[in-house]
Image (cartoon, rainbow, N blue to C red; front, side, top):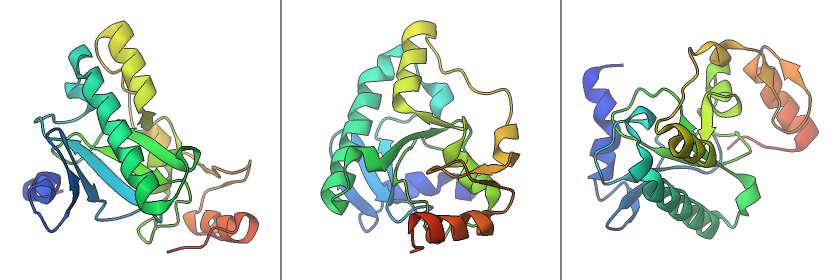
Length: 182
């Protein structure tokens, strides 16, 4: 990724036309490349690069980010909390800590590649509660040693179906689970 593209989230959070919600602590924007029908990013106003930047003193901020993200998405979409996935990628190409808050349908028009599915449906995606637990017990976030999980077979998030092809998985989601692409 080009260096200037790494700053797209910082640019978005400072662009009033892209900001959906803002307060003294966080900014919420729509994901530019949504992987689900509803896909938003919550970013702290504090300059934090990624999950590796987090320390114990950031726990209240993480709780607040998740609360605001869920509150916004539930209000905006009518979804219940159990239908929303909330967490962080272990490794990111963007220069800003950002919390993904997205519907669990994964039917967004940019869900096109196996690694994109696995980035939300394997240990590559860390829920906030796990980050908080690691910060409390170890003082930092423990990351997987590599990105191998991005290249493993695809596992349906609704049943035991496995495949090595994202298009087969999307067909399965549509025909078996009635999830329609956006």
